[in-house]
Length: 142
Image: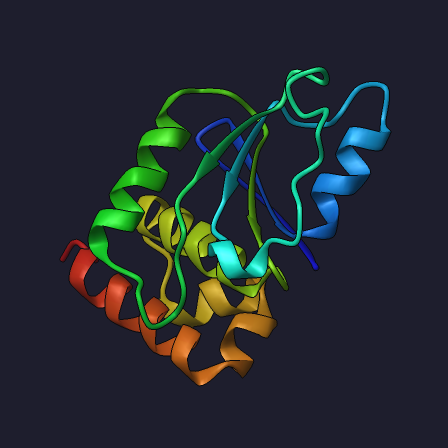
């Protein structure tokens, strides 16, 4: 899975875990910053040559059950660093898409429907759709 969003000149890529292996196999990876949402038990092994490729990996382990506003705050801080594009990574890509959508929809003031149009896969998982809806309800300016 791969979702590309742009928010205020920041390109955000929400990808599944295969992105990491593909990136280290490239001469010039498309991103130098990866925010990894996978829990330890979801990671078989990390590529050994991340640093050689100039890729920084930030770990913010999140599941649909453990998600919190603090996790979003940490992710938003990584976005604020200004390194574009930023890859947000989860095992299947849906959690990464959820968190990318939450950020962009909040900043751009998208409705739930507008956000789900960008990534229908998030809407197909009820727990992710609810997290998105609740987050947007809390952060929508009137």
